[in-house]
Structure formats: structure tokens, C-alpha cells
Length: 111
Image: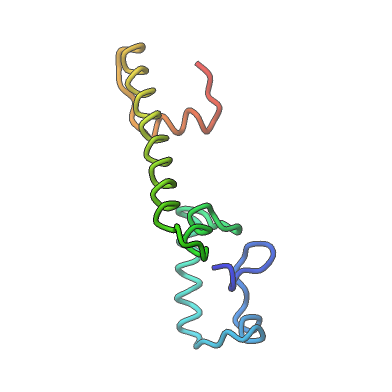
């Protein structure tokens, strides 16, 4: 998406893309626009490359090692959340699903 977004994070017009050297038919543009709208509503659009993007686009020889380390770090973070959720269940007498857990922490909900 980085080539087809403007500074505000919005999809460029077809004319702006043509001036940039990206040529496409109207139907293809509307498909991209539809997909962009769907992705931005569902997951949001990152305007800066993530750590995973940097690893995959890098030219280092140790890509597999870095990729494995990154994925392992993510897995360990998930395990910490699960352990904390188990402790929650023991303390409060009922479990909590991941969606409620994230909602509580994202809203800075204090009990």
C-alpha cells in the first residue's frame, strides 16, 4: 500500500497514480479501492514498515534466524497473556476470553 497512499494515509486518485507511473484500468482501481476500504476498517493500515516487514525486505544473510527470533518473541508474548488470563480465572472464579481481555486493557479499564 505504501506506493498508492498519500501523506494522509488515504488512497491516491487514479490520476495521481498515473502521474506516478502506476497505470491501471478503472476496474482494477475500484478493486484496489474496495480492498483498501475493507482492510482499513478491519485491521487498519500501517504507514510505517513493521518489524516483520523490515526482516522480510532486508538483504541480510541471516533472515531465517531473525524471522525465527521475531516469531518466537510473539509466541512468548501470547503465552504471558494466557498465563495471566489463567491467574485471572483463579482469582475471580470465572474465565475471561481473549476479546474481553484485550478490551479491558485497551480501554484502561480498572477494576
